[in-house]
Length: 182
Image (cartoon, rainbow, N blue to C red; front, top):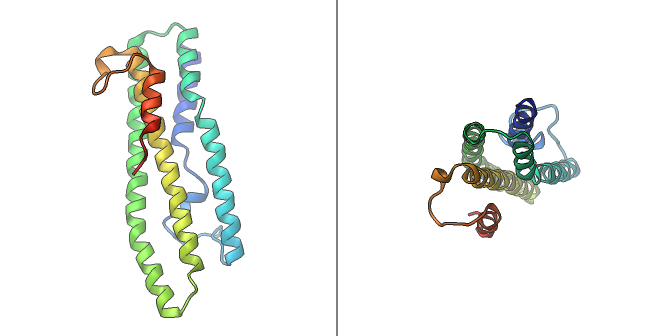
């Protein structure tokens, strides 16, 4: 049980990781906030690297969880309870990110207005749009992880199944991977 509990905390931590570079999405004053076009470009590059690294860390988690549960002979009810807890936490994180992205639309409008009034060439708006697109990638990747957790739960709780029917987690994962985020 201790190994499974340790793995549970690791999965929760990796699934809920808050991207360091995207924490300034609210455009609040920050000492780390870049001030020149070159600094913004470097900042965006670093944020993209951070996303790629997180995505690589997240990818094997479901298989690692399955192996941990199998090795420790965990009770399916405990597994389902754990997965439900993680799903709930990930779901809340997804909703918070969606709300931040929604409020970001207002910020974009202010940037457009400011660019027009100052005759700006739009480099900051381009940066903002690229940065927001990256925030959407984080959110979409987290949504994919959420669905993979639900697929894992279905392996241990047949009552959790619904909608299209799949014979195994791999088929369900392939189906979910084929769905394009909006």
